[in-house]
Image (tube, rainbow, N blue to C red; front, side, top):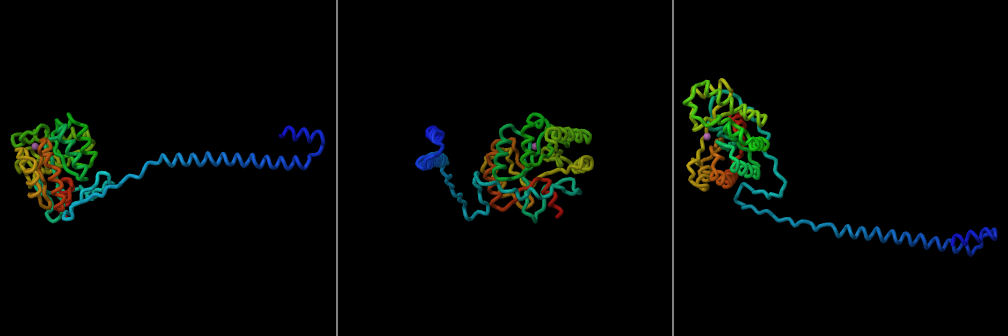
Length: 295
Ligand code: NI
């Protein structure tokens, strides 16, 4: 058309009105057609995109018993901030040993001894993490070297590490120099693996004379941590007995003794921890519990 138009224009020197009209009409239809094609392609893309959007997930309501002060959380829900993270762990000196904390505050400390264990300790860490609970692990030095990844996980998840000697000797049978060397060897192993140094120690079997506790405290600044709740879990009375002894025996300020070395003890923990939460206890580490003691 354009060729014909320009040939006509060159031949005659003028453009006839008919040509002008036909040109305008043709260009109008051409641009209208282009616009229509563009519109079709854009809208079809929009429809395709819309079809690819997945349906909205169906939310399932979480029900909790109304009599309970503890409300279990959905695993899909946003994690709550641990209310105890902000509590100071900077305890003041004075006492060489402790069996419990402040009786007038709601805080308690769960302690787990003789680990880490390659299977039971990670299992326990999962249970604590699910409930947003911090605990204290009194680990054995030579096992720290054997399972460094578990020790690192304990620290990374906000728990406290305590010193439970190098190989679980009865310290009452050692000289002062041997006791100090043993505890320092464990402390160095823990610090090398995790970058943190334990601030408290627990004598194996709870066996340490008063004079020895004072000596350890004077030399290393580490109080001896005993307990006021002992479920005797190492005798393996069964998970339900262990959990009920812990729940019934714990009161404000308690330090609870348990062993992550034993599978049945870890089996007892879901019921024990949930029972303690229902009673309104709040979990802190041993250092935090001691820091609350003078307040
Ligand atoms: Ni022990």
